[in-house]
Image (cartoon, rainbow, N blue to C red; front, side, top):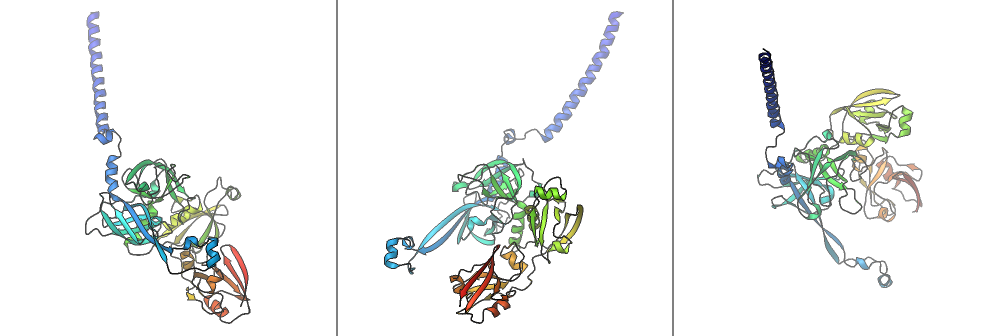
Length: 482
């Protein structure tokens, strides 16, 4: 009886174990099926965690860029400072013999369209008269410069593809990048040929690089060296996240601190080139200041953040949106603003005619304003004029009425009004040391507000010319005999 009960209980236990085993095996099968779909390597490259498939996709769209320019100088210039030469010939400049010297530069570029548009750095092709592009498969093309944008250090080239579709890369939204994302840098370091290096995004929004007007760079530890400039920084989907442009180095080689122009900035320049237009950027019309720890404490902030409005032009879109001196800008279309350079960069990547929502703080209260973005106004009209006259100290200077549009062209940060020198040609102005960018304040007792004022003040001969100009942040007063 005991044996039969034991056998019966054992049979029940065995059934329960069998059911449990089926559940475990079934769950394992389901789990393995799910893992097989998402995680099981499909080929050798995935087993070895290789970047090879990504490189095969991206590398053909990265090219080598060679720029050549001829520099002319006087063949005897090297003797000009020789004391013996000066003893016999004095300080005269000897004309005639000119020697030509060829300067070559090399860098990288990225094909960004099937019809052969290529983006590279301005400093790679600056002054070049002969630009050649060498593809991944060694084919060579002559390239034409379509758009040169020194402010972003970007240049757009075009090659004649004769109808052939070129391998090219797409841009991604660089605002979606995060520190720690894997990236590849592809370029032509030291001219040795195409090279691929890997790394991560080390930092975002770097603002102290100093190679363009818009200080907002992606930092990476992927090795970037001379010659990599203009090459691609790509993500793990093979899309361009940035254009490699600078390194921090004490030796000239890579120290693991490289910088790339974000794709969102590059895209604006490429779109302008493809449309056959110059780059039109929205005008901010304001001077912004960093919010320091002391300023943050005085405003009741828990930490430094935002951009303090230091000066606003009357025609500025910020002014028209109700933003005033002393307000602190904290967001732009929902994106947090931590420093002035970030606000300037984000405005520059937006399209003229669009509307944006700006968040700001005034008197401890958070507010919002909708502003319309536009180009800087040409008001007053510049009325460009070449000044002449044998006794005129400004003879040879080209002057114009200073407007927001002209100030933006000349990359001035102030919002002064008046008359500015835009060019110095041969003449008294060159001899007396006037410079491009000088703002004429007064001649004698006459305040100079317009070009007409300038012409009137320099028409008549003077025994003594008392002149006040502003050069940068300095006001210079000088006295010239007539």
